[in-house]
Length: 238
Image (cartoon, rainbow, N blue to C red; front, side, top):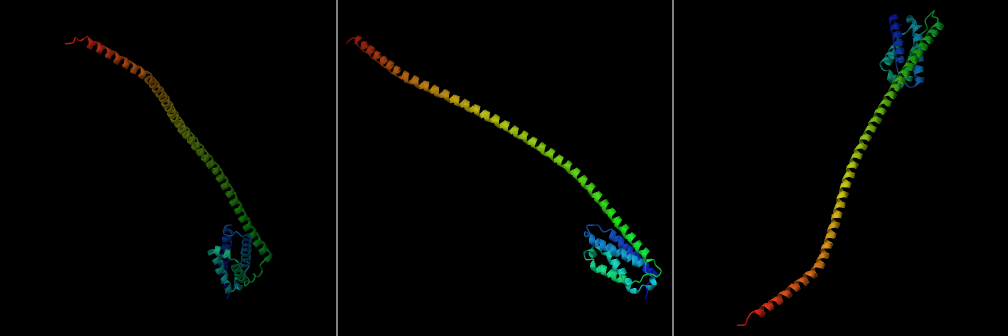
């Protein structure tokens, strides 16, 4: 049995919706331009055939087209990954549709071509907009990167300056301590030299004075002995 006019209109709406879904697919989801162009051509052809179809001549078997379009709308990514089976299914369903009587096929082809061209132009405009947006984002990122690099350079410079100041202060402290120790060493050396000189002079005086003292002691002893003898001699004998 043929389908109703309402069923045909529903099928036409599904085909238009499927084409809109394809237009919304970005390059990340469909990076292969050849697959995108083939799908766009199939969508345009399907809409052309459905618009020129006569509901009175369309068999129930084409209901499979509605299911196929719905599958595309619900699972675009899966079909894009392996589109050949889905495309063959659409073309097989469209082959069952006879052209409408009295329809200007040439005008229909022109309309489909114009629709396809508009779709391509819209897609190109969208891509150009995305490119411009990406370029502006890159410019902003580069500008921000330059600012961050300047901040990092300033921080590194400040850190190096602080480090240099800290090192200089530490070296100055070490130099002062080194000079202090050197001065103390010099003082101790001078004191030791003074002690050595004093010790040497003391030893020299000791060596000089000892013989004198011995001689003086001997003289004193001898003089004392003579005096004692004289004293004893002056004592009367009882």
